Every structure is written in C-alpha cells, then in structure tokens.
Image: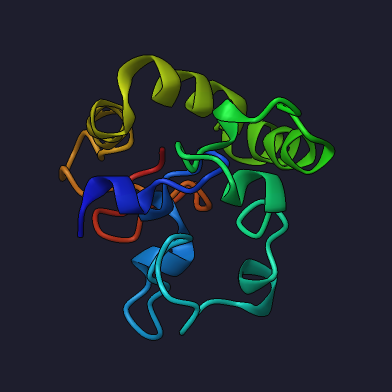
Length: 132
C-alpha cells in the first residue's frame, strides 16, 4: 500500500494502529474503504470533515481552524496515553511531505530488537516480547 494512504487526515500513522496490525478483520486504515472499520472510525468527524474534504492537501494542517476541538482532544489523548502527537505529526507532514514523514515514522516506531513495526496502542510488542 502506498505510504501516503496510511497517514490519516489528522496526522495519525495508521500502520501503527492495533486495528491495522491485527490479522483478522484488518482495518485498511483511515483512507481505505470502510469495510472492517469500527463504527467509530467510519463516523470519525475528522475524516468526514466538510472543510477538510474541500482542501486539496487532504491533511488538517491546511485548515484555517487548526487545531479544531476534535483534533485537540485526539492529540491530548494520544500524547497522554501513547506518546504520539497528532499536531506534531501534522507539522512534520507539512514540513517534510507525507512520504518522508512516513519513512521517519517507520524508523522511529520499529522495534530495536526484531525490526518489526510497533503498535502505538500497546506497550508490549507481541512479536519479540520486548517492552517498549
């Protein structure tokens, strides 16, 4: 899958998501078809934002309302629970471009022991049983 398809409008790297990494009923990521997505993901206010859908970039960094309440809430939750900032990600996407951002993310979130991609939602990686 093309790396740019794995980066959500709000800056999340879908390849780090537990739903994307699971074996059964694998989520195709925020930019993929709605099949196998949870109802919450299908109804996501960021993905379905009317303002964003009019923008050429398809990323929230190009919105005059950045950061909107929904994105601030999501960013706050992800910073506290998972150590990832959507707002910092959006800034990096804007500065570096989505493909370079994706490469940097893969390097940052790869297991130092086995090289497998980590899951942002889990402290414990299942492939090598190493705590991260």
